[in-house]
Amino acid sequence: MLSKLSNEQSSGFTLIELLVVIVIIGILSTLGISSYTGAVEGARDTKRLSDITEIETALQRYFLKEGHYPGSADGVPNQGQQIGAGDTIDTLLAPYLTEVPQDPQHDGVLYFYSYDPKHCVDSVQGACDCAGGVISMTLAINKFEHITSPRKDVCSGGNQNQNNADYNKEFFPSPN
Image (cartoon, rainbow, N blue to C red; front, side, top):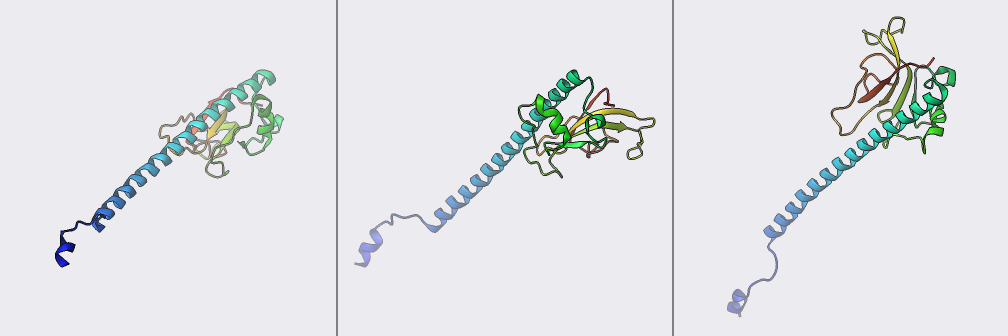
């Protein structure tokens, strides 16, 4: 009877074989999740760029109709506002947009779009009183998740954290 057992081959996997397969599956899962996360972040950044282009077009259409960009005379405070947060700038741009865009991760702290109607550029950051500085209108994406070479027209002055934003674009002339 003992010789009969030793001549039979087992039809299962060894513990080592199972462990190797589990480790390989774990590694592949980790790589897949990392790739997926990067793709999702990249897609959100692409949406941000698309949204900002749409907002820019709406601002230009507003300018063509009103003769100026939205400013304090229109109810937008000089320190600017976040776009997509339900503020005055959203109301002013709504007729020119299908829907007022909001950052895909909008939290109002890190991920948001902003509009600064009186961006003051001065040679000394933080010391701008616009007395001798250049005043313009700026549009910004505060934070990207994946893109590393954003557009930066301004790097000083302004509100809504635009001087530190990952993307900002300057327009002239500034509204009154």
